[in-house]
Length: 194
Image 1 (tube, rainbow, N blue to C red):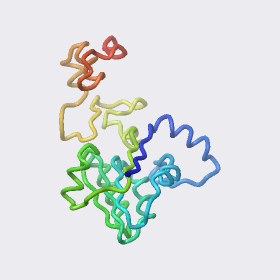
Image 2: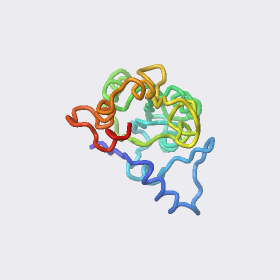
Image 3: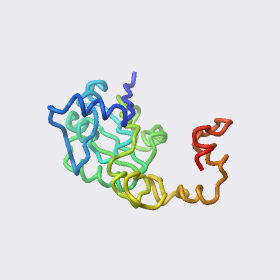
Image 4: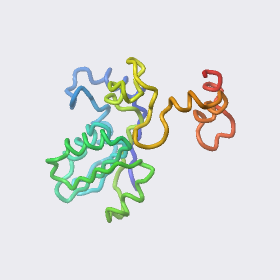
């Protein structure tokens, strides 16, 4: 059985911060990874196991996983954002376990494991929220506090920026985009917000 720890960052981070005000946290570059202890406890990390951080971001959860692995352990770190991939790669340089950092979606995990010659993963961590570092960089287009281009792509070398859809899309088309693939109907919440 593979343990998968997925969390909704915005909701759980508020709970975590409230509960851990007196507890020391691993803060790097202003970013505090949420619920590290809870995620690691749930994953039941074995020192020689193979674990995946499918949304590595700034590498906070990855670093905590790496600390629990020994030289026989493997940590696979994935992220779509090339900036976050490089941050994680730098952060994990001295890890004692085998570390594989790749620019890829967690949806590509089976292919990544196959390419790396790994038969399976013992646990997968998915932090399903946006990284605070992406919000802080206004040029990324995710910030709701700072002026910047309407981009909203994790990998800015692929696809079209959100501004393209705002300029060239229809109200109904934007509603379909927010509804997700195969929804059949536009999202009523976003169809009228054009």
